[in-house]
Length: 342
Ligand code: HEM
Ligand SMILES: *[C@@H]1O[C@H](CO)[C@@H](O)[C@H](O)[C@H]1NC(C)=O
Ligand SMILES: *[C@@H]1O[C@H](CO)[C@@H](O)[C@H](O)[C@H]1NC(C)=O
Image 1: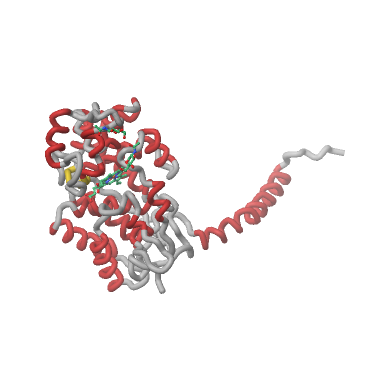
Image 2 (image 1 turned 60 degrees about the horizontal axis):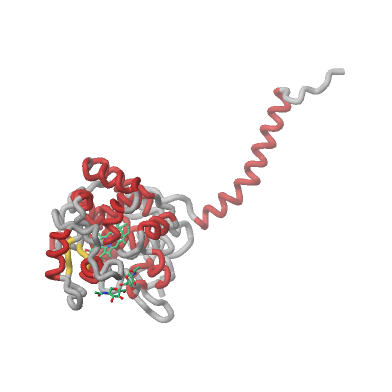
């Protein structure tokens, strides 16, 4: 009698069959739960349900930026402040109401986050074209891309399909969004908690090539950086003197300063050139060259190579836009971005 060959073709076919059945048993629940949890984001998500959405968003953003150049920066920042708090879920847009406490009151957002009226206008225009279809979280993602392009930055294809949260998180906004006087390690840790790495940190900080910061966000550097009564010694002295004229030891907290003094309205790599000249406005900007060798090397590369900065920026924006989205049947499509549906 012949011993049964353990790996005969027949046996192989049989085990393959078992494998397939096993796969279905194992995978089916995953597939079913995918339906409610939702699959990945993808660019054509509104291809049939709202094919004009990107056209509509672009036209409102273009109009708003033409009216006020800074608005591009403010809109780009909103997507960041959305994504870092429980994921890109439109949470940052909610006003306080009932038991819901708005993130607009948090330390990073109070007297600072802006552009909400523009988002309202976009949402109203999109609702008119395709009611209850496009999320506020996706509008923020498209808007951030358009704001970048409108100021001369790179373009990218925006994956879509996010849904809107029913909840805001004031504590999450205070805790997860880095502060301008956080240490390099703290900021990197806050990025890593969101699945972002050092390249993402250095590339996305390049957003500070446009927009403004208030005196209160960097005053400490001008007068008493380490509690020794001395200014930050990693700040160019001539630049510091100029900053002190409009940002005194006390008063003028809300006075605005360009984050990129060289080309404040142009999305380019001059931000990195400023850092190499010790003319970064925020401590969180300057420490990208003073505290970590790998970070410093990236700053140098971006300062020398605008195309590389643009490429990394676009990649990192897609990555940031992918932080914990609500998909499938989770969350909702808000009618008005400022409040959850009644
Ligand atoms: C790396 C950690 C970061 C810190 C500590 C930080 C901090 C700040 C601070 C303090 C301001 C000025 C706020 C004010 O004084 O009103 C600001 C402005 C801004 N930030 Fe950041 N930021 C960081 C990363 C990012 C990222 C990742 C983005 C976008 C992807 C971004 C986009 C912006 C923009 C565009 C502005 C100007 C906003 C305006 O003019 O309205 N920032 N940031
Ligand atoms: C950072 O700034 C905040 C707000 O101005 C302040 O309360 C805190 O003491 C500062 N932290 C450090 C380490 O300087
Ligand atoms: C600088 O800050 C330290 C600690 O916060 C404080 O004790 C000191 O009085 C300050 N010095 C000046 C000159 O403001």
